[in-house]
Amino acid sequence: MRPWKPRRHEFVKRPMDSSVLSVVLLLLVTVAAGQAQSPEPYPFAQYPANEGFSGSPAPPRLATAAQREFRTVLREGAKKGPNFAGHYTVVVWGCGTSCAQVAIIDAITGRISDPPFKLITWDDGNGFLKQYGLHFTLSSSLFVAEGCPEEKNCAIRSYEWKGNKLVLLRTRPVERFPLVPAEPSRITVKP
Image (cartoon, rainbow, N blue to C red; front, side):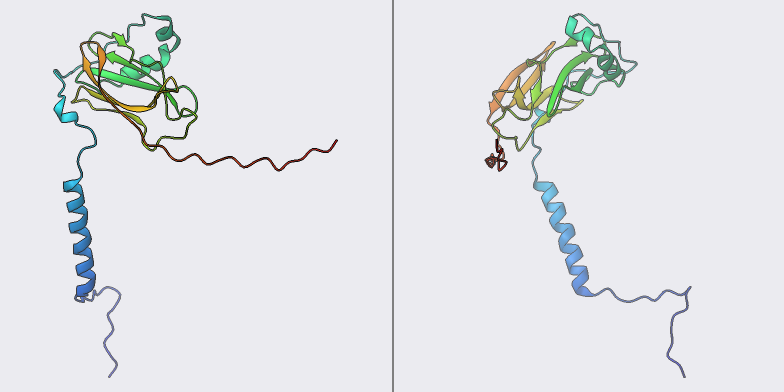
């Protein structure tokens, strides 16, 4: 008699090796514990947005020459609807390598407010920042800018949206990647 072999359509149930099961359970517990203990990087919940928004966002009111210069990106950004402090839309666009410009548009009135910096970069020539970016949520009036406004004074700045402007709450230093010294050129030119 030949030994039994499962046919293609038959499934063979084998008990899972207890060591494999232990490893899987350990990984699940570790991941769950890590997620439960990791604090939110910024306290958005401490700065709740005052009011929400429903409906179609108002078109941006272009009041300055700079706003008119970037009218297309502002109009397209405003169409996406609120993403900050209940009824505001933060529009971000690039201005070169590691550089961003920002405008904040009221979805109800179309009024455009500028942040306290014209542009923000992620490097000021003294080394790239380990953390950088703009952080905000629809449900909070907290706005965090990690970077170098006008390519200087790099820091993590926390602002609160009050009325129609960002009010500075706190400034903290940023961490940088170490600068790697440039090697001298090995090209020689003979006359």
